[in-house]
Amino acid sequence: MIMLIVANFPQSKKHGNCGARQVIEFLSYENHLKKYMLPLIPLSLNRHFVWLGVLLIFLPKINLLSLGGETAGIRIDDFVLVWIAGLIFLFTIIANAWIDRISKIEKIAFWFIGAMVFSNFINILLYRQSSLLYSMRMLEYFVFFYIGIYFAERRDIRRVIWAILIANGIVIALQTLGLIGGFASEGYAPLLPRAIGLTGGPWEVGAVINICFAILVFHYRRMPAFVCYLFGLTMLLLLLTAARMPTVANIVLFGYYFYLRSNSKILFVVKMFFVAIPILTALVLIPNPVFERSANLVNLTNNMDVLASALDRVDPGPTDTIEQPDTEMIEDSDASWVMRAAKWAVAAKLYANTPSAWAWGVGPGHLGTSVDGGWLRLWCETGPIGVLLFISLFKQIAQTGWAARTMIIGVSISMVMIDIYMAYKVMALLFFVAGYMHYRQRNGAALCETGELPSTAWTIYSTPIKALR
Image (cartoon, rainbow, N blue to C red; front, top):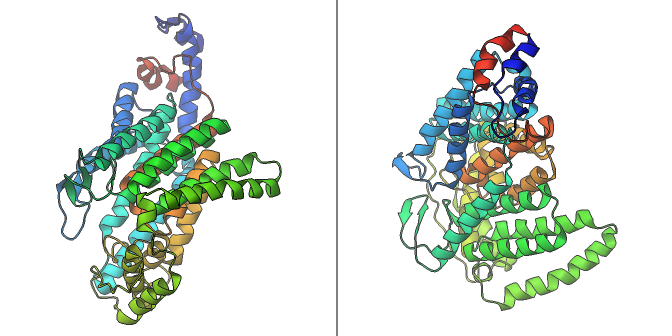
């Protein structure tokens, strides 16, 4: 039966007898997808939704319908991702690929999303607070994990990452010059105080740049000269956005690269010390947005007084609707820290005043659109249960390769001061890369020289191959 299929299989016009070989490799392709839950989807349809998914990473966030009190409304992205998710679910039913084929990443992700939904329902039931929209957003972001897997079947991620970095770099430069605006969370703004690229804010595009740096350096094992050039380019873009935590993350990833290459860790520390001096000197002496925004950040005494004052002023209860808290400026204190102190005080006090939610949190969305502290928000809204599941998810993603590990390090650093796990472009790209790395780790090289399967593959799958089982 196998020989009959091979003999009658149409030969590739470009590669002669490659068609016969593709049948044998196609059986392996089907087994790979079946083993890792993903169903076989007709290739023409596969190409459409994969490239649509990639396109969504580039498109700015434009609300078609605003939702009261939320910066994120209903977007075209939502319709596309629902269609893709429905397509994968439909073919999963057809292929009968169910729970026994779900990977650890998927299981933990679904448990985490389930914990978010559970926290929503408990807090809505008890206090009529929190928003199910935030949990559904996380489920929507995870669709990119499957897009990444399908992308990895026949494609290399390098061009996409370079395209993301270059496209955002060009837009950042034009926004810095005041030639174009951008689509921020509140909608299109013709003039921007800080460049945001193709994302909703400077903090978001900064984390996207960190991910691009991690993939291009650690996935392809680049030589030091290339890493230094890429570091200079990404640092320039980050300085133009004035995004401080992504800047710190980029420096950490740069140092981590040389740490891994160093035979003597003591010698590495000495070298990094002498490298850090000119970098810090340049940041201080050369005018740049990052240093200008951070002039009062090192004034720890005043900044701690701001936090203490905020904790004394607020005392929210579990039924209170959280709005933008009042801020109290103290002389020579950092403006962004003043805003964070007020938000952090509200988050901490609300969590402390809700003993019934100490295990599962006060519910995703209860703290409003922004807390400016990802790890604090995650703890307060989903509790220790959500935090442990989230860390487990990051751990599983990190185990797919060095690039994924460093990507997770960069995002984790940004989460200290940014609600980055709720940022659409960052999480979409993170899960897309995670799916790509997961597939490459488990399934190895490409299927054929051409990188494509024949157009008649679906017909062969649906009829004679079933008879071989």
